[in-house]
Image (cartoon, rainbow, N blue to C red; front, side, top):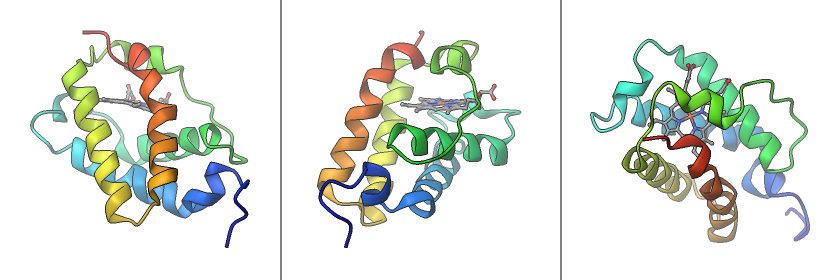
Amino acid sequence: QPKPDASLFSRIGGLPMLSRLSNQTLDIVSKDPRTARSFEGVKMVTLKQSLTNFLCVKTGGQCEYEGETMKNAHADAHITMAEFEIMVEVLRERMDINGVGTKEKNELLKILAPMKRDVVSD
Ligand code: HEM
């Protein structure tokens, strides 16, 4: 059992859980007709890896994220608020399905929520 003061990264289940959540979320949103348009022509294997590393760093794991800022990564796609909310909802559902604890789920969502202002530009 992880200690109560362990990082969110380790409490959530480390890289195996973060990569599962990234892969599943991206598989779903890249096929959902409400969000698919932004992912056309995007190398999904690379994006899954990059999102996993990003989440690793943001939750306190020992990873290197060498990708773009959230603003730069999403500027060209002109992501809407509706698209952002769908992706967060899909991630929330994947966390439930994969057995992430309520506390850990809410902590991750709280980390991601303020990124809306950088991701959404339309
Ligand atoms: C809090 C929410 C989000 C986070 C944390 C996030 C995170 C990321 C990360 C880490 C990358 C990789 C950047 C790089 O490697 O340089 C990325 C790229 C991308 N994201 Fe997001 N993203 C979010 C929301 C969204 C939404 C809502 C959409 C569309 C529905 C989206 C579509 C994309 C696309 C298409 C790329 C690839 C851009 C490219 O390769 O040109 N993202 N995102």
